[in-house]
Image 1 (spheres, protein in one colour):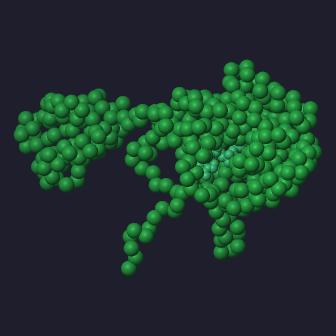
Image 2 (tube, protein in one colour; image 1 turned 45 degrees about the horizontal axis):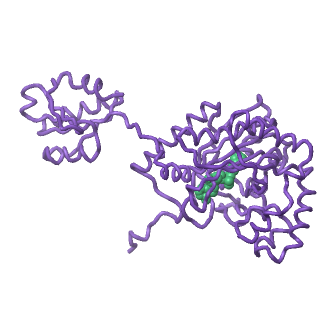
Image 3 (cartoon, helix red, strand yellow; image 1 turned 180 degrees about the vertical axis):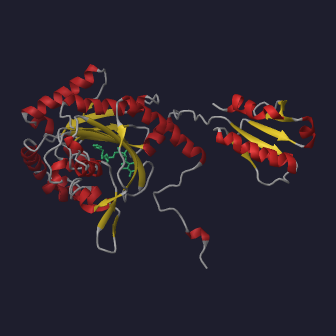
Length: 426
Ligand code: HAM
């Protein structure tokens, strides 16, 4: 015999329903309306992708590819991955549908679940949700500024202000390799002081040492040579212009030479929005420019810049500041019939009203007493209950009980449909 208690959701993956899910809806609504104002339209990719879509693009030596991907193999031997992030899948789709041959620029957003095998903790899950935006085919620094301004506005629209915007440039194929050598040299002379993981990383991914959370590594990195001091002229001009664009709109940002991001595909702008409302997992969102990503799929370079925010983390930050928007549920009523004739009449009428868009609830247990039915109405948080018994039927009217005030009034039965729509349908 199986024991029912053994069936549990996977660690780090959550069920959502009721009031918690209503908060999600309110938060989604605001985010989507900001994305709409900025001209972004939705893009959806499948939850499963070929393994190479991520291993090629995110980078073999990133945490995501090294140890965080949920992989599965089909009977025929295909290796598939549950999407750990949206950008690589998006670029795969752009190339597959040749969207880069269409009009420039193009603006897309996605709102999708992502999967990473990480150690769950506050703000860190194994199935989490990202809202991301990608601005395709615009190489200008103003496009980078737009993406940062969009993420900022998504947060500001809730009244959330407790975060910092950290911006850096990670250079390009021309200036990054020589910088890596300079950095390697610096770190090489201090290798004994680095944490064991950074000692391993140093040879192939020295930039990753820059965002190591280990205090001694972080200390060493403070005096390390900085990418921004080694940018080639075009990267330097681009970086300065991104900051100017942000300054023109009055958005304060922090220049942070240690923002390198945990994904390999960035060039030039890289940024993170961090908040002390979140605890250890302080990144509300992040992104950057990834002009070279399409090349990793064998295409020519395609200019693109984007971000993704973690919806669970946004909810945590909003909860901490009591900024979750009020949920507008629309009108709803409860039908409480007493006796078979009233039951049949209200049963039919409830569907007439539902067909017109008003939420009507009733119990399909005709013998339940009025007290029980009114308790249900209360529990379901409807605005009003409609009571119809033999006496009311004879008089050709119903009693309408407003749940908040307890006030009761009579309404002619023949006018009930019209009245309910007028009063409760928004
Ligand atoms: P990312 O920094 O890996 O970037 O993730 C973006 C955001 O997703 C993080 O800042 C965080 O809020 C959230 N997040 C990441 N991992 C978890 C987790 N395990 N649990 C909860 N939330 C998490 C990307 O994914 C890039 N694709 C962003 C991008 C778009 N770059 C260009 N376009």
